[in-house]
Length: 169
View 1: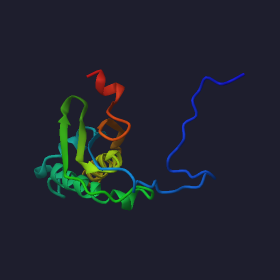
View 2: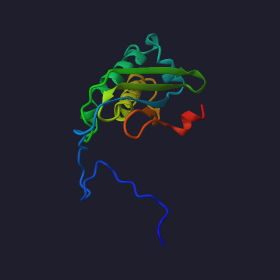
View 3: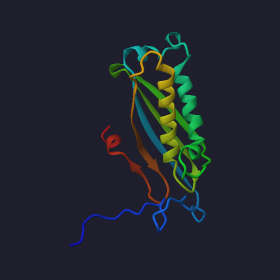
C-alpha cells in the first residue's frame, strides 16, 4: 500500500545524506524579503528595566535593535550551511506589550539574491531577544524567549509564503 505522504527532499543533504551547502551558482538573483518575530516575556521587574533610567546597562531596546541588525549581517557565522549574503535593508522593531509585560521583536530583511533571507530575519530577532535578556537579567532571570518564528517570505522559486498565524491577524 502506497503512503499518501509526500517525501520531502532536504536541500542541505547530498545523495548519501551528508550535510552540504546548497549550490546556488546557477540561480539568478531575484528581489526577496523575509519577516520573523520573537516574543520576549519579561515580568514586572524586567519590564520596568526597559527604561534606561531603571536599567544600569542603558537603553535595552536600542542596544537590542543594534544587536539584531548586526547579527543579521553575520548569519553565516551562526548557521554553518548558510550562504554569506548581502542584503539591502534590515528593519527591526521592538514593541512593548504592557498588558502581557513582553516585547515583540520583528525583523524584515530585504534585498536581491540567489537565496532567501529567512535565516537572516530569524537570526536578527533571536540576537535582539537574547540581548534584551542580557540587558534585563539583573532585574529578573526568569525572562522567557519564544516563540521565534518566520512570519512571511517573498520572492524566489518557491514564491510567497505567509504564516497561518499571521494570516489570522
